Length: 313
Image (cartoon, rainbow, N blue to C red; front, side):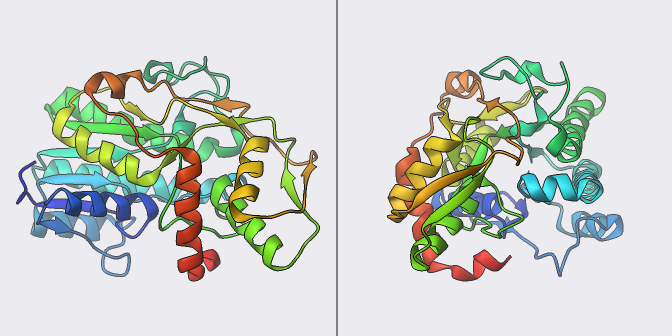
């Protein structure tokens, strides 16, 4: 990309999209296009077609998505599948129709099989059954990355995809039902602290292992890949390190300075036992994350404190 290239960031108000915009600005890119949902509904094909026809972006970061944690995913299966599949297909197809030089599709590590060999390599995709609690979301994301691959093969496009692990950081969603595990823990322990609650109850037994990547590190990788990678196979985005949910809750409690007891509701689901990405491909390309988990959670907590309205989304 040139510094003056016309770059469209879809989903610029979300956690990932806003981080990509910050990173592009930091690196000196000056021609960034964005649209709010009220101005452009990506689930409406005619609106997307008109936007691409008039704007003709040269590069597209497709970070728009309907996202949520284990509760939202399991309760709204049809919504997660439909909204994600239709918006990504609209954007990718219109980008191709209007001569977009390069598109980068943002997926999720939930695309990989529930019991995939650990750490999960990019080539384990579609080798066995998905995790049921987020199967609908995963199928939509798999469709998006495969459509990029098929366009490359059939029409010679240069469309790539990146699959992030669990993300957190500025502009996260702290809603009690619709958030992911780390922002949910930040909110829960913060509220327990200010309300002097004697205990906090967490879902499952705390045994699942998870990997977390600070969203600004992901954004740095996204820009790096746009400039340095072409290929049909996706690229994993993570740290290569994992932590148990129990250890994570203890770390969040420590950072927030919550002194109460942590209890576990084992009647609730754990989700996938382990989700560690193999990040050797990104390393071989020359990229490495920079924000360690404790430092990142401190930054995320400060963002939560500075922007309390996000807890209501």
